[in-house]
Image (cartoon, rainbow, N blue to C red):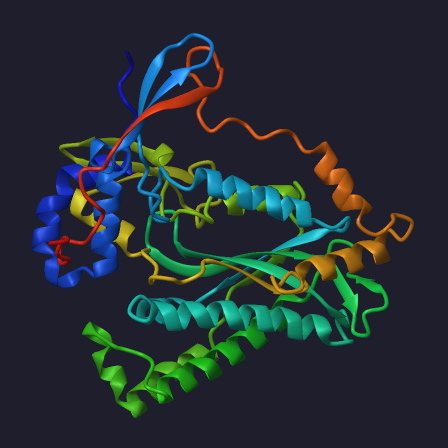
Length: 397
């Protein structure tokens, strides 16, 4: 038998207990819960079931998943469902990949103010797209956008930004026609960047005045309004990175890229190379290097690897995927149907959806035999040993 593939869970199981004790006062309850979930995922601690193949009758034991949204092993099925749903929403138009990135000084304080500043990143990015698109000087249309939050760089550093996929056009302001953007061009990036910068800093200042921000360590002095104003001033002049391009491989490629990150964070198990006396080695991509050496490997001490991984634990209940404009959840179906009729008027209302449903492939079985590929059935279940909880929480009496 071959050696088992290295997993993030292996690092947490080996080094997590000691590091958890040493860092107890610095880890949030959410981070502690993520550590425990990853350590227990697909182990006997969570229980499981016995499977039997319908054809070859082989038995297999399968342990339950933790289903934590930060776990590298979980949520693959949810990510596939998300990808299928978004592909079903695609219109017969060009699509554009957009990215809005927070500058480094704001990223530093965003770590202690995740819910507020990540939320502003979503709302201001969506507002910027919709405002510029509605301007008759640019597009003059109501557009839709799906945005996905990423908080990490390839080296696991804290790097908050939102990726989005946006149809290349929208409904006219009166809703009577489809307004297409110019071929290969969506909206001017410079204009998007300037509005994004202005509106984000306005909302950031409003949140500060409302007492919604916290400052620690080297930023503790920003509690003084004068110090905060001095800190904010250079951000009004620096360039804010906004990206908007048509993907070469089409919208399906962008959706597939986003789906790999919609239901997990930071790093996949496939990027891990080694876990030995030198530390944890993993593959990463240096985007500043334009040559053939862009793909590199990095080795971190286990404690630093775990610290960087846990930088990206999101606040409880925070939505990482959001839809705006024509794609907003409350009226998405109606808006997409209206857009399809304007784009392809000869197709009867609802016909596209019926055709899609009729041609859909039957669902793949949840459990498949690794030996013959036949469906496996659950013949026995066994209970978990304990519930996933943080070390600070007491169990039931």
